[in-house]
Structures are given as structure tokens and as C-alpha cells.
Length: 107
Length: 120
Image (tube, chains in turn blue, red):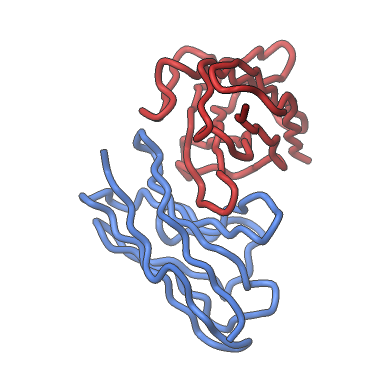
């Protein structure tokens, strides 16, 4: 099975900061990677699919990049509603493994 | 508007059984693969199981294989998860989600979840 490793596990940042989260796959997965945001007490929300495609309705400050084994989620200018936990997920290959999550909290 | 409403959670003793349901509306249910994803208290997301739109193919995590069975009733727009031989480590919030094989390969709509607690 392919393992998905996220780093860091948590990051403290301020409104307006640029934040980068990394996800590494244990073997090459092309661009079959999705990113989700989960606010406390809420269901996850799809942000990015196929590594870099922005889901409809998601603000353009979110972007994704990468292919093969190394992927990045970037928030260009952190907003108050972006303080949440972010997960990557292997897409289109079972088991659909999630990364361990990255919590973005207020510095 | 896509809506997914889970039900059937509750408190069950170890070794017991429970059946979760997910009522779907706002889309052509039979055209979508569906998944169950769970989240233990204070922990991350764990994929549990996925079923294709026709119900012809099913995939499950090793942690639940042989104990949990995903199924669907397209005439009722409902997804199910039959959970047998429950263990304390199955305690979690269980979400149902649409799984769009193409073009995203991702879960694009989620319910609010139903809580399963396995404890004596």
C-alpha cells in the first residue's frame, strides 16, 4: 500500500502569512492527489484535486503543485477562516490513504 | 444542492453490530461511487470503504475487511455500512461522501457524520 506523509504536523502563522504544507507519497502517484480542509466540528471540504486543480468555489489563494512523490499545498495569504486542519489524500488508487494532517493555528 | 445525511450511529458493546445509513439527494445517486470515511476522536481521517455506482465493485481498508460491508440501494438513494464484530478502536465519527472517479479521483461532497461509540 502507498503511504502518505504530511509535514509539518502543525504550523503557527498569522493572518496574511504565506503557508506551505507538504505531502509525500511512498511511491510515485503521478498527480493523483487531493487536498482537503477541515474546520473544527465540520466535515472535510475538497480544495484541490489532481494535485493542482482548484475545486469550484475555492478561493484562489489556495494552490497545489507537485507530481510523482512530492506535493505542496500553498495558502498565499492566510485568512481568519483558513485556520483549520489540512489533509492530503491519495486519489484513484485503493486504499485511498489520507495523510496524517497539518493543523494551521494562530501564532 | 447535494445533501448527504448519515444516521444509525450510537453506543454498542464490543463484538456488537450496527448498520449506518446515508440518505442522498440533489444528484443522480446511481451515477456516483460512494465512500465511508471515519475520524476517531481527536484523530485524522481514515478511509473505510468505497462502492461503485452500480454496486458491482467494493473496496475496503484492511482494518475493516471481513467485518464491515458497504452496500447501496439505488432505488432508495441510500448508502449503507454494515458493521459487525465491532471493536473499541472503531469508535469514530463516520462520514459518507461522494467519490468522483473522474476527473477528480476525490471526495467532493460530504455529510455531517454519525457517531459510533464502541464501549462496554
